[in-house]
Length: 184
Image 1 (tube, one colour):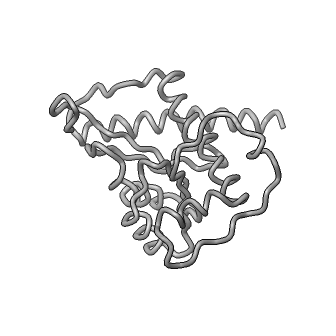
Image 2 (cartoon, rainbow, N blue to C red):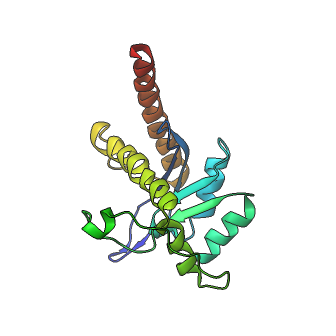
């Protein structure tokens, strides 16, 4: 993978996480240095197991070509992405009740249309689920399970290793979900 220090033996591990159960429903590994071209392959990995109606992605995956192709490929699919960084914490203006902004015209630039999706109350509530699903999943894999680097080399072997890590995470999560059902 090309990096600022030249080429490195590195991989880009991806995980698609279902929001309700927090189970990994699509995982893959690539050697792409950024995620701009990874939306469609990741969506295909997820679609092998579930058919999402809404896909929540971070700004690293956003490209007009990829988002347009994904929404054209899957009927009824909506992609929500943060198009700008917002500071941590909330201001008084953000806490006040406000009406949804008017929808941009159909010929508005792509970035403006995407920003509008997360500017509505429904869009904000839906996109907020991303930080409660994907980020804890990656944190658990890194901290609780101690997986910080691949032990194998070669894309095929690393993909197998990532599949095993995701399977182990899912088994751990299913055990946790089963324990919650027994106490309920």
